[in-house]
Length: 456
Image (cartoon, rainbow, N blue to C red; front, side):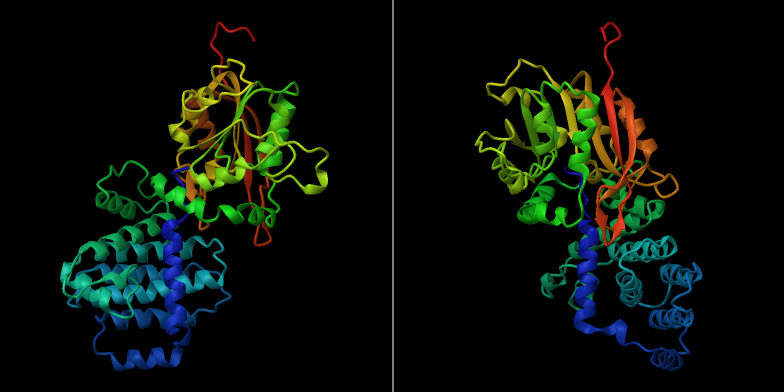
């Protein structure tokens, strides 16, 4: 699951914001009286970035908080535009005004529980774009000066060395800001293009939606492997059972062998094992997740409740568990490495499942091609995703504030069909609850097309 953006940038941004607010309490303490006084004191310098910020802040506070209107956020978009224009004000002053503006809206996001608000997110995306654009153009001495300011929002500012000026920190933060911008607004082409230039990528590709390095993803999942199951249980997590039901209803007679792609701690394996007469293989990027799955037996572990254990068996639930990126899977490094008594000389899998795995992928084309390459003709593919609309996700997918990707039905269908799969069944599901709200999801069942001369 290297493509898990798991909102690395989003989390860094939120953690920095929270730490800043807790440390200084600046935004919460600002009153309208103080704002107006500051404006009055600086009224002769309307080009001052601080003046423009406080003027915008006063306008923002003049709009009732319960008024759900795009006008409340338009003023921040206008501020971003003003700060981007050539100005006699030093770049550091403009950057610091942007940081203050970002804090205001981030605080609004925090207070709203990160609920979706398109006008707000677009305004914040503009501020992050402007912030990133200005950061990436700073000279080494200016970058270091900014980092050494105690109020700086730069991530990693504590590493700055006054005796060794460098642009690196600002370039890293510029990348982070631009990723935030495209995450907040997938249609922000300026941010996407600038990020592509910064990363020396083709801007026609996915930009901020590029997959994270697999080493990062492995470390991320390793870090919460021990608490993974308990957290999902608290969310009324249903996907493993739904996947099992879908597989059983399609072929009651069962399957010769199965691949549990992105198996994690093995929650789906508990539902798949009764359906598979031959090898059940699990693949995941996280070794610590696999270590937990490896402890699962036919009578215990992997979500199996103690009260339901009717017999003791030390036989492993999985016949093989392999740590690797899903897109690196082949028959040679999965099925053919399984030396077990159930081996049935199969050349590929006749069942592949990905239970809540593809929500860590942006574009689905490559991973579905991989699934097709390890599947038998006529083999079944079942996967779940979080659901979005074409209006919300013009690319066919979008990164949510949770760090997971949501996909459109159309993108999933198109990617699957390109890989040679034919739709068998589509279900709209509720994979879990989050903050008391039902998550929108879907469950797909596909069959890999058979050669035309195959007998059905």
